[in-house]
Structure formats: structure tokens, C-alpha cells
Length: 116
Image 1 (cartoon, rainbow, N blue to C red):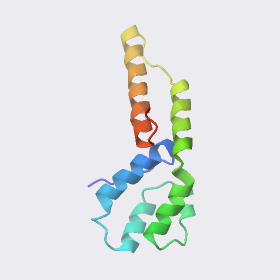
Image 2: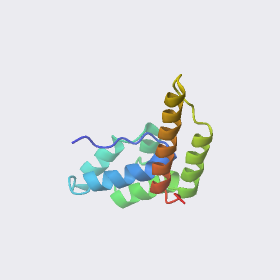
Image 3: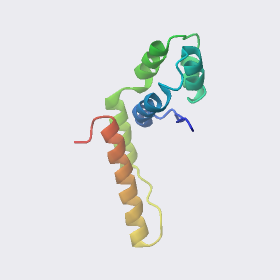
Image 4: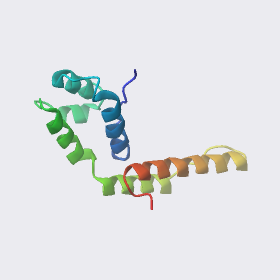
């Protein structure tokens, strides 16, 4: 089973956290192994924030305080959508590119609870 990798992007954090809990919670009952796996699947900056943390709940609290701001995530998603790079040369390719970007933004906004 491939575990999810967190990129460090605030707009991806809540989806990462949810997926991680579903896939990992029952697999790694040992807190030390759980934390080791978590640290191996987050960027260096996040890993550094967890230096010395030995309790799973504390690790998530640290990550949540840095990456879990739903308003900041929603603002990032909408800013990314405003600066969407359209690819393709034909009109239909450009429209497909825009549609894909919008769909990804909608999915991200659902994860942060800002889809309306």
C-alpha cells in the first residue's frame, strides 16, 4: 500500500490528513512507527516542526496549527484558480484545461468546507 505524500501545500493538507487517517490509523498501532511513517511522508519543513514530538495527537495538532487553516486554504485555492495556466493550442484543448482546473478547485474547496 502506498501511503499519501504531503507536498506542503496548504490547500492539499486537509485531504492528506483525511486520507492518512483512513489508510494508516489501523495499520500502525505503535505510536513510534506511526510517527516515523508520518515524518517520512511530509516535507522537511513540516518534519522539522515535529522534532521531539512523541505523541500522535500532538503531531497532528502541530501540523493542524500550521496547515489546517480552512480560510487560508480556500484563499489559496481561489488565488490559484485566478492564475490558472491554460494549456493546449486548439480551443477544445484550452476549454478542457480550464474545466480540469475548475474541477480541481471545486474538489479542493469541498475538502476545506468552502464549496458554496
